[in-house]
Image 1 (cartoon, one colour):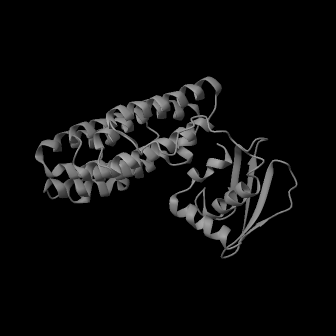
Image 2 (spheres, rainbow, N blue to C red; image 1 turned 60 degrees about the vertical axis):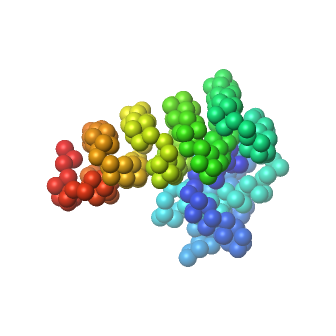
Image 3 (spheres, rainbow, N blue to C red; image 1 turned 120 degrees about the vertical axis):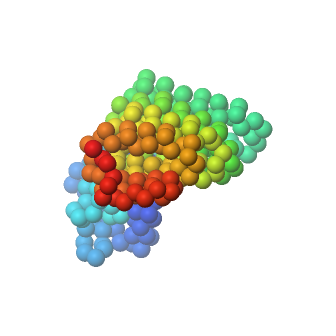
Length: 288
């Protein structure tokens, strides 16, 4: 991962807080002792010490903060911002895809356009596989997120699901096998918004979306349980219609095969019961 895309390691809230620290001048740069190691002091409730190690061209090798917060905290976010600003001329990456800024301005046929989008994503994927280049994966990822946002904001839900499915089935299967970037940047958690919107808009087939999620849960055992809980919570809205309760229950049963703390799914079970109009207290949930 290049430091130019390191913001993907942080939640939006955490990165905004890091930007506040940067804007307020609360990040102090320590004297550099090693050409590849950058050390900072971030002034918060106390002085926090961070260090970031990169290779010759700016790819992240390690990052650490001595606070007791999460791995990628606001102090590290602020430090990455300072490093990126100070070294923006030294650590440059050339875009591979060269996507025009007006890509979505003159769309006449959205079904044809999504084929073009997937074609661009395939170019990135093929390049990454051939040259072991993760930079292009992040470039494609940002393009994908922008396109998903545009499709759903314009209620092209079926098109969005087509792209979403291809991303999960093809692109992410390679990326997760190549390195830990998807886990480090909480990729799966960032897809929760799409599931929420697709359910809320009520345009795509519930059976299709439930089946897609079932396949993804089977394909990616590394999806964290809190993310699964969020996905199932959103999908449980389909239980308002009796016809979808059986496939939903099958989806829940698939998750129950995992080794997990049952408390991690209590929210999803609660809303499944609520939308199914049945009394389902937590203490009788069968998670065995």
